[in-house]
Length: 510
Figure 1: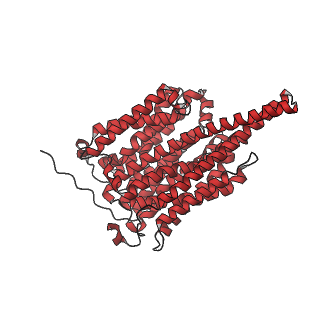
Figure 2: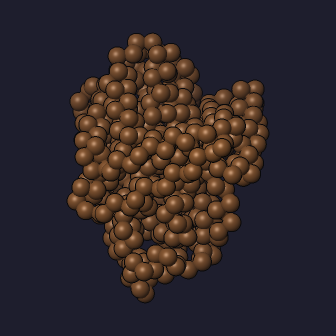
Figure 3: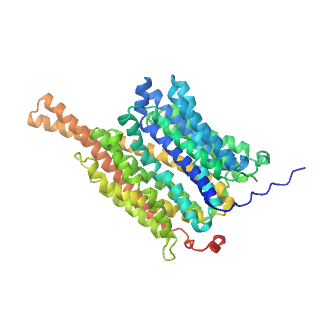
């Protein structure tokens, strides 16, 4: 005999208290983004403080990514089961405690264990932002909630570059790489405790879940995360570890997805992908995450390699993208509310601005300093919110509020994997193109040295110039590839089914 299913909790009235609760959820999501990116950017300083080697310390990023991607698809399910308020407060508290403890870890195994736990805990904070926005915000302002979620992909990664520089180059205290989230955690904890409604727990869902599929997906996603994180360092499929991780991860993930498809109570309702806007939206979302690295990764890497910049010196370029997102996302949302605006065209315009930014970046020379990148980054600052907010609107407009948790889990899984995959692909491309240009330039230098009778010391001096030029040419190639990707995505953006601007609450059921 089975018990009757528990009714969904009633929709609370949106007011100041609930708005502050959602603010706490937003702060926690931004905190999660900063926690991931800042420690990764300053890994060299963490290694120096502890005396860790390059290869062993690289696993600090890997174990965090593994924890993050393993929990994100299922975070919304657990938030409903335990209640969003309890779930959010437990994760924020655990993340804050772990951040306090991490700087005191003396051995690499201890740091790996704590960092892995932090990935699991913090990874569950970002999906709940989209879930809460879809559930609590009235339809007439829901787009602004999606704009807040978009900031986890536009504001947090760019703000992290500047913060990494502040903690390591200005305050000269690497411990703040972890402690920075403590004030944010305490603030978000207070806001969530006071503002979020306390729903009754729904523990009966534990007996309904697809636990076989859950275990398979966790294993598969974890193995894939290991493969993508360590692939560049271990030369991909030349390494038995990477080969085993990628093959095993693909098999386990595929079987887990098949199990989810056929289970009556899945964690991810894959049948929703039959809706055109969702399938297209997920595809473009991965492409956008890769494109965003043209603003967050390429100029920072170029200035570090060619000009010797530290994160604090190049952080201004990231702030050019990051800080405007505090207002640009909502401005794009307001624009999408206009009855004459077609979100598909706004998405296409955003992609066009990103393509133009990449085309300008491809003109890079060895003399470029941060000022030469300002226009490139300004176009990124405009194009990113236009693209991602429009994309989220087109995708989620075909989703009913009850389906929000399924969408939240899937899109956040893609978010974690898209960023990791994009970073690995661009790093590998830079490596290959840098090696290619270096070999070509060195061959030309060798021939010129013989013809001109250059001394060995002169050839050595010119070799440094060759390395600089190879990095410059590789950066230009990466910009060109990403620019072409942006152009390829524009026709896909126009293939969405048109969604009417959400001007009236009555349209929420259309």
